[in-house]
Image (tube, rainbow, N blue to C red; front, side, top):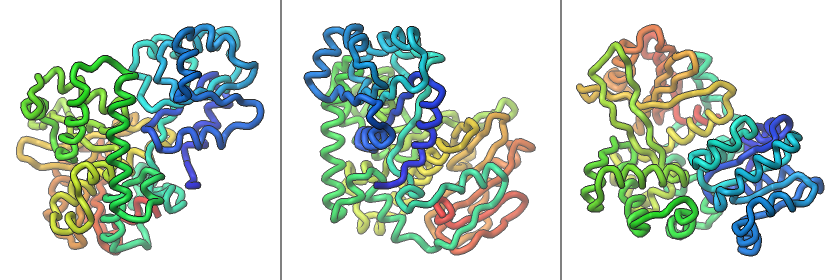
Length: 408
């Protein structure tokens, strides 16, 4: 079993919060992790069990009221949103910490039934696909060092083959253990098909459920690119508002994320469109039929997928940082870009650029230097991740850092 560094977050929340909600995509290990944290004091119930589902659906209030006098794990709770109001009533009668450990494969925090019911009574923990730190059993330090304005370093260098493999196979536990790239891709294809057909029905009424699969496949071709809702809508013959709604549902199912554009009141020449990233590059490669061999022949596509891989690694590490962080991309009207801007609670900015190659030149820092000038005193550190062999300074608070520093 891989170490899951979010286990600490869950334990801490259970110690002082009545309801803890572990949310994330299906098959990332939520159930496995929840079961590893409980003992005989707990009762485990899954709403994927059709009998339990029918009972809870028919009478949500009675279902919660008649639970055994134990601490309760309720798995896949998003399938019956009405349960949240009943859980609130139960918690208000007894606010004992750690009464309920909920898991869900959809972001139920976006459901109106939850936003009004468990506020102040619940803490959420986001469980993602495995990070490279967890796969290699290394404690994450990269993001913590960046936030401390320290340039990370590593002994793991020249990692192109490893990065190609990780991008194609992805970071879900099951495909990581399969015997071949082809078998990993088969798992993702089945995963996507089942997920759309099954879970989307639990969230909302969809007029065109078949188009959700087509939209997910279409977004796979926009990995690391600006989102153009009109263009996406035209390809599926849907209007802009419907496409916006459907992308929001893909986000709610933890399949894609939109990365907003960084903005400044003082500087107006900024592009405001978000970028789109899949939550796992293995899923994207399976959808598009991309293999290691094909990515070797298509370096531009590999670069975009590598950008998404780095984004996901940074987001995973942010879950284990004590301070709140916001993520953006930077692009101005001159088409000068920075892949990721990380902003902390007091507005300090840390920039990360991704380059798949091993060579470096001054032009690679154009975006970082432009953003450094725009952000002014808010700019604290700029990192260019590359496939090289040592950390090198390229000016004031600008560094080239090997990819291996992400997890070593």
